Length: 146
Image (cartoon, rainbow, N blue to C red; front, side, top):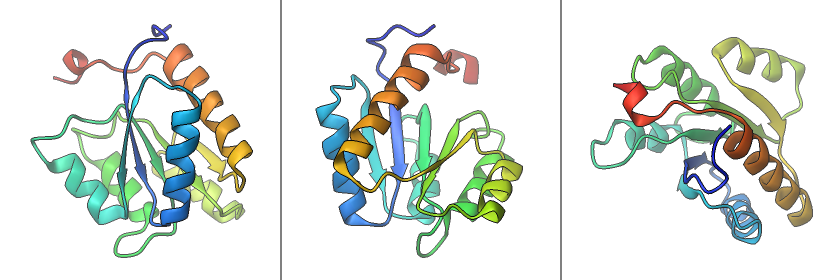
């Protein structure tokens, strides 16, 4: 089990500014000890991952429907890249399409969650995210990645 005080980097790929704000406020309200970073589409997500001056995220929250490069394309690239395929990717989207759910898991998603639409729902999601991905799951350390 991870230490509850462990600081992990969560990268959220989300194009909607209202959803980014909702996630940020729920994150702050939940008192998570992790670092939250945002990108606005799949292109920015991959640029973030390839940059040498940014730490590799421990967890990615990925919207499917984004401009330039959607979440499906980004997920495919992440899971086919040796350096990034170990990163857990949680699809966090408004779609509840069975085709999207199946395709996301087929591409290597770790989880598929329908995006909460209220602040309370997002707060509950952030608390569950912290409980599971930070306190329960053992994530690969930087030294394991090398």
